[in-house]
Image 1 (cartoon, helix red, strand yellow):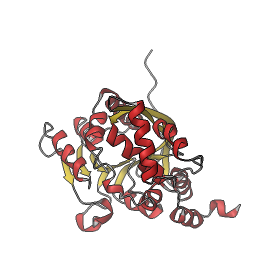
Image 2 (tube, one colour):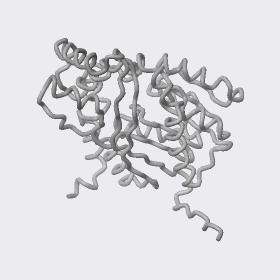
Image 3 (cartoon, one colour):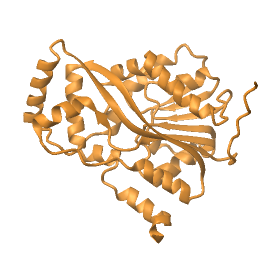
Image 4 (spheres, one colour):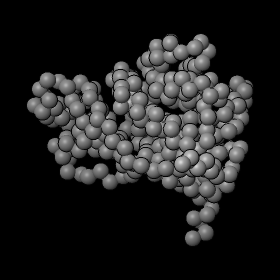
Amino acid sequence: MNTFFDASVWEKAWKEDRNTAINKMLNAGMDPTRVFDKRAVSFNKEVFSEGGKKRTHRILSWIEGQNVDFNGMTVLDIGAASGGFSVAFAERGARVTAVEPNGPLRELLQKNIQDLPEGSVEVIAEPFEDIDLEGRGWLNKFDLVFVSMCPVITDWDGAERVLSCARGYCYISMPAGRREHSLLDDVRTLVTQEPIRDEIMEFAYLLHLLYLKGYSFESILSREVKTTKSDLEIANKEVINWLKIHGLPADENSLSIITEYMQQTYPDGQVEYQEGGRFGKVLIRLQDLNMYTRKPRQA
Protein backbone atom coordinates (compact mmCIF):
# COMPACT_ATOMS: atom_id res chain seq x y z
CA MET A 1 0.00 0.00 0.00
CA ASN A 2 2.88 2.38 0.73
CA THR A 3 3.97 2.26 -2.92
CA PHE A 4 0.59 3.68 -3.94
CA PHE A 5 1.74 7.02 -2.49
CA ASP A 6 5.35 6.75 -3.68
CA ALA A 7 5.79 9.10 -6.65
CA SER A 8 9.08 7.47 -7.67
CA VAL A 9 7.30 4.13 -8.11
CA TRP A 10 4.71 5.71 -10.40
CA GLU A 11 7.34 7.63 -12.37
CA LYS A 12 9.27 4.41 -12.96
CA ALA A 13 6.12 2.46 -13.89
CA TRP A 14 5.12 5.10 -16.45
CA LYS A 15 8.59 5.27 -17.98
CA GLU A 16 8.78 1.47 -18.32
CA ASP A 17 5.21 0.85 -19.49
CA ARG A 18 5.45 -0.63 -22.99
CA ASN A 19 1.72 -0.14 -23.58
CA THR A 20 1.75 3.65 -23.60
CA ALA A 21 0.54 5.14 -26.88
CA ILE A 22 3.98 6.42 -27.88
CA ASN A 23 5.74 3.15 -27.08
CA LYS A 24 3.17 1.15 -29.03
CA MET A 25 3.74 3.37 -32.06
CA LEU A 26 7.51 3.10 -31.78
CA ASN A 27 7.32 -0.68 -31.30
CA ALA A 28 5.24 -0.83 -34.49
CA GLY A 29 8.01 0.98 -36.36
CA MET A 30 6.03 4.20 -36.71
CA ASP A 31 7.42 7.73 -36.40
CA PRO A 32 4.85 9.74 -34.38
CA THR A 33 5.83 12.95 -36.19
CA ARG A 34 5.00 11.39 -39.59
CA VAL A 35 1.74 9.61 -38.79
CA PHE A 36 -0.35 12.39 -40.36
CA ASP A 37 1.68 12.77 -43.55
CA LYS A 38 -0.98 11.10 -45.71
CA ARG A 39 -3.95 12.15 -43.57
CA ALA A 40 -3.14 15.84 -43.17
CA VAL A 41 -5.66 17.14 -45.72
CA SER A 42 -8.57 14.99 -44.54
CA PHE A 43 -7.67 15.70 -40.90
CA ASN A 44 -7.66 19.45 -41.57
CA LYS A 45 -11.00 19.24 -43.34
CA GLU A 46 -12.51 17.44 -40.35
CA VAL A 47 -11.01 19.87 -37.80
CA PHE A 48 -12.52 22.89 -39.54
CA SER A 49 -15.84 21.22 -40.33
CA GLU A 50 -18.93 22.21 -38.39
CA GLY A 51 -18.51 19.20 -36.09
CA GLY A 52 -14.81 19.88 -35.59
CA LYS A 53 -15.43 23.51 -34.69
CA LYS A 54 -18.08 22.44 -32.20
CA ARG A 55 -15.58 20.12 -30.49
CA THR A 56 -13.03 22.92 -30.32
CA HIS A 57 -15.63 25.29 -28.86
CA ARG A 58 -16.71 22.67 -26.29
CA ILE A 59 -13.15 22.19 -25.02
CA LEU A 60 -12.32 25.89 -24.90
CA SER A 61 -15.64 26.62 -23.21
CA TRP A 62 -14.77 24.08 -20.50
CA ILE A 63 -11.47 25.89 -19.90
CA GLU A 64 -13.20 29.28 -19.90
CA GLY A 65 -15.62 27.85 -17.35
CA GLN A 66 -12.67 27.64 -14.94
CA ASN A 67 -12.36 31.46 -15.11
CA VAL A 68 -9.73 31.46 -17.88
CA ASP A 69 -9.97 34.48 -20.21
CA PHE A 70 -7.98 33.93 -23.43
CA ASN A 71 -8.06 37.60 -24.43
CA GLY A 72 -4.53 38.98 -24.08
CA MET A 73 -3.08 35.64 -23.00
CA THR A 74 0.15 34.14 -24.29
CA VAL A 75 -0.54 30.55 -25.33
CA LEU A 76 1.92 27.79 -26.23
CA ASP A 77 0.08 25.23 -28.39
CA ILE A 78 2.27 22.11 -28.50
CA GLY A 79 1.38 19.78 -31.36
CA ALA A 80 -0.77 22.43 -33.02
CA ALA A 81 -1.48 20.26 -36.09
CA SER A 82 -3.30 22.32 -38.74
CA GLY A 83 -4.32 24.95 -36.21
CA GLY A 84 -7.80 24.08 -35.01
CA PHE A 85 -7.06 25.35 -31.51
CA SER A 86 -4.39 27.92 -32.45
CA VAL A 87 -6.85 29.72 -34.73
CA ALA A 88 -9.56 29.61 -32.05
CA PHE A 89 -7.19 31.01 -29.41
CA ALA A 90 -6.15 33.84 -31.72
CA GLU A 91 -9.77 34.64 -32.58
CA ARG A 92 -10.37 35.01 -28.83
CA GLY A 93 -7.57 37.55 -28.54
CA ALA A 94 -4.61 35.39 -27.49
CA ARG A 95 -1.06 35.58 -28.83
CA VAL A 96 -0.16 32.04 -29.84
CA THR A 97 3.09 30.17 -30.29
CA ALA A 98 2.20 27.06 -32.28
CA VAL A 99 4.67 24.16 -32.32
CA GLU A 100 4.15 21.68 -35.16
CA PRO A 101 7.01 19.57 -36.57
CA ASN A 102 4.95 17.67 -39.16
CA GLY A 103 5.48 19.27 -42.58
CA PRO A 104 2.08 18.69 -44.24
CA LEU A 105 0.19 19.76 -41.12
CA ARG A 106 2.41 22.81 -40.68
CA GLU A 107 1.75 23.93 -44.27
CA LEU A 108 -1.98 23.75 -43.61
CA LEU A 109 -1.49 25.63 -40.33
CA GLN A 110 0.28 28.45 -42.20
CA LYS A 111 -2.65 28.69 -44.62
CA ASN A 112 -5.24 28.63 -41.85
CA ILE A 113 -3.72 31.60 -40.01
CA GLN A 114 -3.36 33.84 -43.08
CA ASP A 115 -6.53 35.81 -42.34
CA LEU A 116 -5.68 36.39 -38.68
CA PRO A 117 -4.06 39.64 -37.49
CA GLU A 118 -0.34 39.66 -38.27
CA GLY A 119 1.76 38.32 -35.42
CA SER A 120 -1.13 36.66 -33.58
CA VAL A 121 0.26 33.17 -34.30
CA GLU A 122 3.96 32.32 -34.49
CA VAL A 123 4.68 28.90 -36.01
CA ILE A 124 7.62 26.82 -34.76
CA ALA A 125 8.73 23.84 -36.87
CA GLU A 126 11.17 22.39 -34.34
CA PRO A 127 9.94 19.40 -32.28
CA PHE A 128 9.17 20.49 -28.74
CA GLU A 129 11.46 17.79 -27.37
CA ASP A 130 14.44 19.39 -29.18
CA ILE A 131 13.83 22.99 -28.13
CA ASP A 132 16.26 24.59 -25.67
CA LEU A 133 13.60 25.98 -23.34
CA GLU A 134 15.98 28.06 -21.25
CA GLY A 135 17.88 29.36 -24.26
CA ARG A 136 14.68 30.39 -25.99
CA GLY A 137 13.32 32.00 -22.83
CA TRP A 138 10.31 29.70 -22.61
CA LEU A 139 10.65 28.72 -18.95
CA ASN A 140 7.68 30.06 -16.99
CA LYS A 141 6.80 32.22 -20.00
CA PHE A 142 3.28 31.35 -21.15
CA ASP A 143 -0.03 32.13 -19.48
CA LEU A 144 -1.36 28.84 -20.86
CA VAL A 145 0.43 25.79 -22.20
CA PHE A 146 -1.95 23.67 -24.26
CA VAL A 147 -1.26 20.03 -25.23
CA SER A 148 -4.19 18.30 -26.91
CA MET A 149 -3.74 14.64 -27.86
CA CYS A 150 -0.07 15.14 -28.69
CA PRO A 151 2.45 12.33 -27.91
CA VAL A 152 4.99 14.82 -26.56
CA ILE A 153 4.29 13.66 -22.99
CA THR A 154 5.75 10.14 -22.84
CA ASP A 155 6.51 10.02 -19.09
CA TRP A 156 6.63 12.29 -16.03
CA ASP A 157 9.84 13.96 -17.26
CA GLY A 158 7.93 14.97 -20.38
CA ALA A 159 5.05 16.28 -18.28
CA GLU A 160 7.42 18.38 -16.16
CA ARG A 161 9.06 19.76 -19.30
CA VAL A 162 5.66 20.92 -20.54
CA LEU A 163 4.69 22.33 -17.13
CA SER A 164 7.96 24.27 -16.90
CA CYS A 165 6.81 26.55 -19.73
CA ALA A 166 3.59 27.59 -18.00
CA ARG A 167 3.12 30.36 -15.47
CA GLY A 168 -0.68 30.36 -15.20
CA TYR A 169 -2.33 27.23 -16.53
CA CYS A 170 -1.48 24.02 -18.33
CA TYR A 171 -4.06 21.97 -20.24
CA ILE A 172 -3.32 18.37 -21.19
CA SER A 173 -5.60 15.85 -22.89
CA MET A 174 -4.86 12.16 -23.50
CA PRO A 175 -6.59 8.91 -24.37
CA ALA A 176 -7.95 7.23 -21.26
CA GLY A 177 -8.33 3.62 -22.37
CA ARG A 178 -8.50 1.66 -25.59
CA ARG A 179 -9.35 3.65 -28.68
CA GLU A 180 -12.59 2.73 -30.45
CA HIS A 181 -12.43 2.26 -34.21
CA SER A 182 -15.40 0.68 -36.02
CA LEU A 183 -13.43 -0.11 -39.17
CA LEU A 184 -10.72 -1.88 -37.18
CA ASP A 185 -13.43 -3.88 -35.41
CA ASP A 186 -14.91 -4.85 -38.78
CA VAL A 187 -11.69 -6.17 -40.32
CA ARG A 188 -9.81 -7.52 -37.29
CA THR A 189 -11.62 -10.86 -37.26
CA LEU A 190 -10.80 -11.32 -40.96
CA VAL A 191 -7.09 -11.57 -40.19
CA THR A 192 -6.97 -12.86 -36.60
CA GLN A 193 -9.12 -14.20 -33.79
CA GLU A 194 -6.85 -12.57 -31.23
CA PRO A 195 -8.68 -9.88 -29.25
CA ILE A 196 -7.37 -6.43 -28.44
CA ARG A 197 -6.53 -6.65 -24.76
CA ASP A 198 -4.27 -3.73 -23.96
CA GLU A 199 -5.29 -0.38 -22.53
CA ILE A 200 -3.61 3.01 -22.71
CA MET A 201 -3.04 4.23 -19.15
CA GLU A 202 -1.01 7.45 -19.45
CA PHE A 203 -3.81 9.60 -18.11
CA ALA A 204 -3.98 7.53 -14.93
CA TYR A 205 -0.23 7.98 -14.40
CA LEU A 206 -0.51 11.72 -15.06
CA LEU A 207 -3.41 12.36 -12.68
CA HIS A 208 -1.93 10.29 -9.87
CA LEU A 209 1.46 12.00 -10.12
CA LEU A 210 -0.15 15.44 -10.25
CA TYR A 211 -1.94 14.52 -7.03
CA LEU A 212 1.16 13.10 -5.34
CA LYS A 213 3.26 16.12 -6.28
CA GLY A 214 0.80 18.63 -4.87
CA TYR A 215 -0.65 20.27 -7.99
CA SER A 216 -4.05 21.93 -8.08
CA PHE A 217 -6.18 20.88 -11.02
CA GLU A 218 -9.61 20.26 -12.49
CA SER A 219 -10.19 17.17 -14.61
CA ILE A 220 -12.90 15.59 -16.71
CA LEU A 221 -13.09 12.18 -18.37
CA SER A 222 -15.62 11.57 -21.12
CA ARG A 223 -16.39 9.31 -24.06
CA GLU A 224 -16.23 11.03 -27.43
CA VAL A 225 -16.95 9.49 -30.85
CA LYS A 226 -16.79 11.12 -34.26
CA THR A 227 -17.51 10.04 -37.83
CA THR A 228 -14.53 10.04 -40.18
CA LYS A 229 -14.64 9.90 -43.96
CA SER A 230 -11.63 9.04 -46.13
CA ASP A 231 -10.72 7.41 -49.40
CA LEU A 232 -9.97 3.70 -49.67
CA GLU A 233 -6.17 3.95 -49.75
CA ILE A 234 -5.93 6.11 -46.64
CA ALA A 235 -8.44 3.94 -44.78
CA ASN A 236 -6.44 0.81 -45.65
CA LYS A 237 -3.25 2.33 -44.24
CA GLU A 238 -5.13 3.54 -41.17
CA VAL A 239 -6.34 0.03 -40.35
CA ILE A 240 -2.94 -1.56 -40.99
CA ASN A 241 -1.32 1.01 -38.68
CA TRP A 242 -3.81 0.20 -35.92
CA LEU A 243 -3.16 -3.53 -36.34
CA LYS A 244 0.56 -2.83 -35.96
CA ILE A 245 0.00 -0.67 -32.90
CA HIS A 246 -1.96 -3.47 -31.22
CA GLY A 247 0.61 -6.10 -32.18
CA LEU A 248 -1.82 -7.93 -34.51
CA PRO A 249 -1.02 -9.41 -37.94
CA ALA A 250 -0.31 -6.61 -40.42
CA ASP A 251 1.63 -8.38 -43.16
CA GLU A 252 1.02 -8.46 -46.93
CA ASN A 253 -1.56 -11.22 -46.56
CA SER A 254 -3.49 -9.13 -44.04
CA LEU A 255 -3.34 -6.11 -46.34
CA SER A 256 -4.64 -8.22 -49.24
CA ILE A 257 -7.57 -9.52 -47.17
CA ILE A 258 -8.43 -6.05 -45.88
CA THR A 259 -8.17 -4.45 -49.33
CA GLU A 260 -10.53 -7.04 -50.83
CA TYR A 261 -13.03 -6.52 -48.00
CA MET A 262 -12.88 -2.74 -48.34
CA GLN A 263 -13.34 -2.82 -52.12
CA GLN A 264 -16.40 -5.02 -51.76
CA THR A 265 -17.88 -3.06 -48.87
CA TYR A 266 -17.12 0.44 -50.24
CA PRO A 267 -17.32 0.12 -54.04
CA ASP A 268 -17.36 3.91 -54.52
CA GLY A 269 -13.96 4.17 -52.80
CA GLN A 270 -15.26 6.36 -49.96
CA VAL A 271 -15.02 4.91 -46.46
CA GLU A 272 -16.97 6.12 -43.45
CA TYR A 273 -16.33 4.90 -39.92
CA GLN A 274 -16.60 5.90 -36.27
CA GLU A 275 -13.60 6.47 -34.06
CA GLY A 276 -13.15 7.71 -30.54
CA GLY A 277 -13.05 6.36 -27.02
CA ARG A 278 -12.61 7.73 -23.51
CA PHE A 279 -10.47 10.84 -23.24
CA GLY A 280 -9.14 12.64 -20.20
CA LYS A 281 -8.65 16.39 -19.90
CA VAL A 282 -6.92 18.18 -17.07
CA LEU A 283 -6.41 21.90 -16.41
CA ILE A 284 -3.54 22.47 -13.99
CA ARG A 285 -3.44 25.72 -12.00
CA LEU A 286 0.00 27.16 -11.32
CA GLN A 287 -0.90 30.53 -9.76
CA ASP A 288 -4.44 30.87 -8.44
CA LEU A 289 -4.72 27.52 -6.66
CA ASN A 290 -8.17 28.06 -5.18
CA MET A 291 -11.37 26.57 -6.54
CA TYR A 292 -13.13 29.01 -8.86
CA THR A 293 -16.64 29.96 -7.74
CA ARG A 294 -18.98 31.15 -10.47
CA LYS A 295 -21.24 34.08 -9.79
CA PRO A 296 -24.87 33.03 -9.21
CA ARG A 297 -27.23 33.58 -12.09
CA GLN A 298 -29.45 36.60 -11.84
CA ALA A 299 -33.12 35.79 -11.40
